[in-house]
Length: 304
Ligand code: RIB
Image (cartoon, rainbow, N blue to C red; front, side):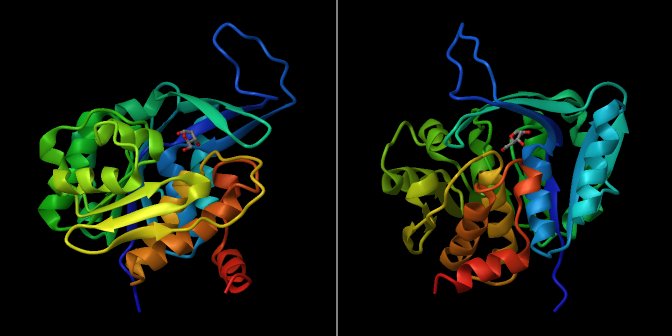
């Protein structure tokens, strides 16, 4: 069976990662225990997650003409992501300054660089690719107008779209019915669901806004998957000794998209995605931590 490709419209960053005993408070200086420069960016991470799982994937985005630009394209290509729709533009690539603390928790500052140059016009140049997708994955690290245009293009060509609302930012009312899958973490869900705390209540509010399906990513608690007019229930997370959670949510989204496009139901797809994410948090780096299909299959086989 030949599957349509997954197309990611999203950010490509170089992650500048400091390992630290704890996340620094405002005004605090800490002595770190390690440092790495490693490819990341929510869009690129999701694309690499898809590629490692063996599905065809393209990314539409931009990197800079600086030292990071070529390294970021190389990392995508080595993973098997098609980069025909990645342009190099004057100026710096996107970067993320990241602190990773002892139990794997993180804090991130993104400076968009070239990602901020991805315009609606640029997406129009890749409309045929977008229209050919089995699913499009978007996040919110590109300019908001570009993200909105991505959803409009998908709606126009009937392509399902998964929006990961990270980093969370207000969304216009018109966008909700264009979203097939909305995948916030707990903090993000609170912004969009009027501060609702329970997953059940948040999902109900988000579905009422017009999205077709919701996956509330709750880390070690698992994920709550709800479909408009259909079922809603929890999918438990797998136990994992987390050392670095950077990119775990991206890993989940990439794997969830692969499983859905291969025909799994949303709850089975979320279980597959949870397994992939559980493996990713046991490794350092964002793109570097994404598991292969064989690794996920073996992980699941040991937990039947
Ligand atoms: O989701 C993790 C990612 O967020 C990092 O790789 C960083 O680049 C930021 O985009």
